[in-house]
Every structure is written in structure tokens, then in C-alpha cells.
Image (tube, rainbow, N blue to C red; front, side, top):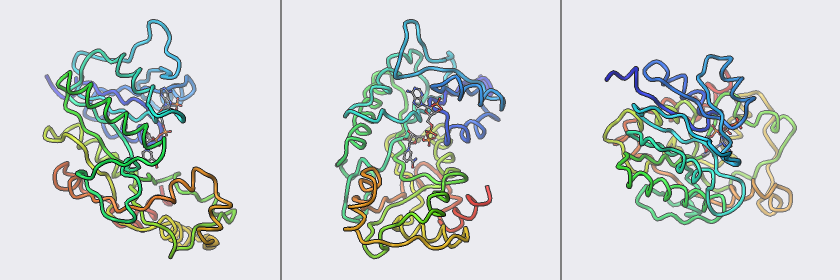
Length: 293
Ligand SMILES: NC(=O)c1ccc[n+]([C@@H]2O[C@H](COP(=O)([O-])OP(=O)(O)OC[C@H]3O[C@@H](n4cnc5c(N)ncnc54)[C@H](OP(=O)(O)O)[C@@H]3O)[C@@H](O)[C@H]2O)c1
């Protein structure tokens, strides 16, 4: 059987998924699964093969699009906004009846919680601090059980903040949105969307890939340092810097929950075992490419 006849399902085909689809379509027969008819018709207009399924509202007779020659399922649907479990993934796994060769689950580095800036590799225990991170931990575990029972090669990609063309907060920065003072902000990591897509492709095509991989550009800098560089390269005035105490009074709870955690996510296993060659290990280059894209 040739690669061209093998099928890949991208479950959740938004910002990351559509770029992944474009990268895979040369070699595989790809289907993009989305929630709304609107997204499906937008993708279909660009030549994507699409299917629609709302994992929050499963109707009788619903199914996920599968073929007998299933190379991979790449699961990019975010968990629901509430609860400690990922019911969307649970429903999806119940509907997926044809086991693929591999299942790639895109998770987050939030599962490590706050390490106070200490480095973490994949051997570190998970320590979720928020419901958002707890949903991810339960989702990772669901995929482990499902894949083990079906002898499916499972790859979990733990991903930090994703940026790229159209995914820099330029509007908010132009309006003068404040950041935490650089010397008070914790460290974190990011990944350019093109490098994340490379990691997804490697997870599908490298038969040795299995288990958990941290996906990160390796640059442990604060979001404040990153945004100051965005402002400089975009020609926007530098954002005003406020103390953490002031941020706690004025920033949204969601934004604060990200800022309250600090960790350095190591990416050696991604580079050496998964085989990802980063295009944007240098975040300044990644920002420049994002502004041009
Ligand atoms: N943003 C970050 O910095 C970050 C960091 C770490 C991990 N991640 C994770 O990376 C993954 C991909 O992110 P992204 O930015 O590409 O996401 P996105 O642009 O928001 O796309 C999400 C996709 O999932 C579909 N979807 C949402 N709810 C659904 C439901 N109930 N049933 C079926 N499909 C549903 C959406 O369909 P419609 O278009 O029809 O709504 C869309 O195709 C997500 O799991 C995200 O949480 C993101």
C-alpha cells in the first residue's frame, strides 16, 4: 500500500490544523474535522476535504470519518472550558472505531504547573494547578488507555504558547495593553506554528516516535521579554510595564493564571528522539517571520 492511499484525520482543524493539512496533503489523503458548518465551508472553499461533528452535541448515528487504511489521527480539539475532564475527547474516542497506526494528541506544558522557573523534561511528574491543566492531564490519560487497548502508537506533544502569522497580540499592544515588569515576570517558552507543524509531521511519520515530547523553542524568557521584542520589531511603542501587584488588580483571571506559573521546558527529546529541526529556535527570527506572513 502506498502512502498516497493512507488516510489522516485532523480532528480540530483551526489555526494549527489548517497548516498541518497543507503540509500533509502532498503525501496523504487528509480529512479535516471541524465543529461548525461555517468552518467546514471556509475550508472546503480552499480545497480541504472536510467533515463536521460537534463533540459537545453528539446526535444519534454520529460518526468520525475513518478509512480502513488509517495512518494517523491528530487530535487538536481544545478541551471544553469547564470541568476537570475532557468530555469532547471522551466522546471522540468512543466514536473512533477504526484504530489508526498512530494517535497524536496535542496537549500543553501547563500540565507541569509552576516549577518556580526550574527546568522540566518529560520525566518530571505532572502537577496541574488549574482546571484547564487538570483537563489536559485527564485527556492525556484517556489517550494512553485507548491507545494501549488498541495497540496504537501514541504520541503526546506538550505545547507552550503558540505564535505565528496572525497570532501576535498586535491590536492589544497598539491599544497600549500593559505587561508585567520584565524583572518580576516568570519565564516560559513558546513555539512558532511552523515548528509545531513539523513536530506533528514527525510524530506521524517517525515510526520510533512514542510517548510524551515537550515541544518548545528552548528559549526560556518571560512573556514580557517576548512582547517587548514584538513591539520593537513591529514598530509599536513598547508596552507600559506594571508591577505584579498592579497586574493582579487589573489583568483578567485567565491572563493572570498563565503569568502565575514559571518554568523552563526542555526540548532535547523533541530534537534528538522525535527528530525536529527547529526553524525558529531564535524567537526574534520567529517574530520577524510572523510579521511578514
Ligand atoms: N494557543 C496556544 O497557545 C496553545 C498552547 C498549547 C496548546 N494549544 C492547543 O493546541 C490545539 C490547537 O490549537 P489551535 O490554535 O489550532 O485551535 P483553534 O484554532 O481554536 O482550532 C480549534 C479547532 O477545533 C474545533 N473544535 C472546537 N470545539 C469543537 C467541538 N466541540 N467539536 C468538534 N470540533 C471542535 C474547531 O472547529 P470550528 O472552527 O468549527 O469551531 C477548530 O477547527 C488546541 O487543542 C489548543 O488548545 C494551544
